[in-house]
Length: 164
Image 1 (spheres, rainbow, N blue to C red):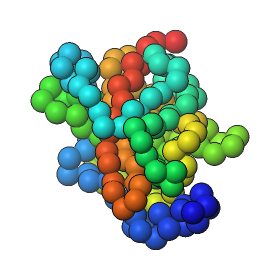
Image 2: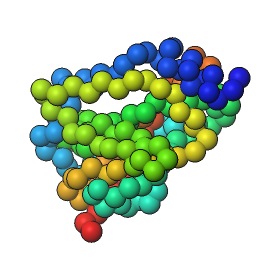
Image 3: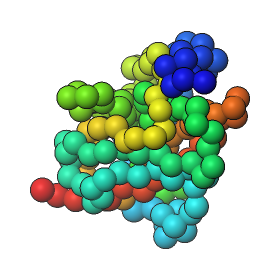
C-alpha cells in the first residue's frame, strides 16, 4: 500500500479530530524535576528529539521509531509536551510537527482553550521539525502515538531544556 493511501486511510480511521483533555492538563502546573525512574522508564515507541538538550524556541527534529513496524505505520501531526508536577506527567503544550520549511508550532494549554487537530497520517520513516516551548530549564517529556495495521501504540521521550 502506498504512503499517500495509508495517510488518507489514517485520516479516516484515526478520527477526524483530536481534543486535548483539559481536565488533566494545565499550563499552570508546578513543573518539577521528575524522579530518576520516570526519566529512565522504557517506552514502547522510541521518541527522540535532536539535538537534546535543546533551548527554548529552538527548532529541533522530532522522530519516532517503532521496533518492527509495518511499512505503513503513521503518526499524527501533534504530540503532547509534558512536565512532572510532583506526582505525574501533565500536558502543558501541544506540539505540532512542521513540514518542509515550516518548523511547526507549540501551543500552551489552559482550561479555556481546547486544541482540535485534523488527524493526518505522517510516515514514521523520517523526523519532522518542531519548536521547543518557551519553558524553564529542566527535564520534560514528549508523549506521542503511532498507528500500524489497526494497532495504536503510545510512547514518550525525555527532553532536557537548557538556557541559551
